[in-house]
Length: 121
Length: 202
Image 1 (cartoon, chains in turn orange, blue):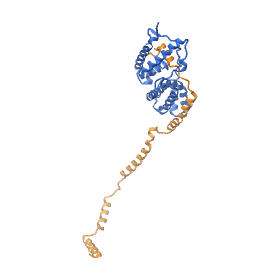
Image 2: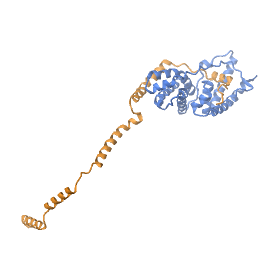
Image 3: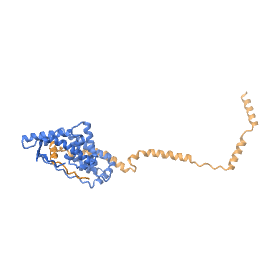
Image 4: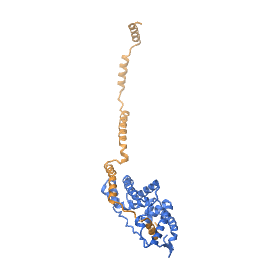
């Protein structure tokens, strides 16, 4: 970088400083006190942020992430529930029971006649 | 830029700027501030408060406004400390915050840079004639400053009144070193033109 920082114009600088004067003296203790008083809350926030394992911008996402986890777990359990094992023998047995318990056509006619008599039609 | 054949014949003292504050431990201080360390923050406040007030006063021209601006700048440091790049110097980053806020405040309030001539600068001089001449010169110089584009005026205030170096100003204003130099050159041309009647050949 070209060095030009000392390329000042002392006369112009002096004229400017004469025209504008030095800044007034401030009450430095009061100013420091005001700054430090206003800084208390932001500093406390910074301390809290530092203690948290999560950066501040991610902390808001924690409840959402938890909710998503619950939903995801429930979904996974529902979808991936293992199918019960059914053997061919089991199927045959169930079919037989169902067939035996079904009424025959003649039984259906009889039951229809009984029902008609019961309701008097 | 400084090799002009004529110069302003003024017998005003040139204020010598204090040396720049130490920066060797500032990375550690900023890191502690990031963790909410009040003592570290207070160290930075003590270190930069005076110069910050001086710059703020140059920008806003009023003591109360300057004090408010200093407070705002330090609060902004706490709000944005997470964005501070470790390993970089603190001062340019801090003064960028301060100057940007100061310029915004100046625009918002439509303030002129300085509205009053401080008493310390207004009444001193060896004779009534000399006093009158200097008062006229001050008025003319201040009027010329007001005609400068805002960026040029800010650069003159930082460079000639506050003693910042060109590269520091470049970093504060986020412009190139060459641009700072060009603005300064243009501003000086304007100011010297305004002061031409007061120049005496060497």
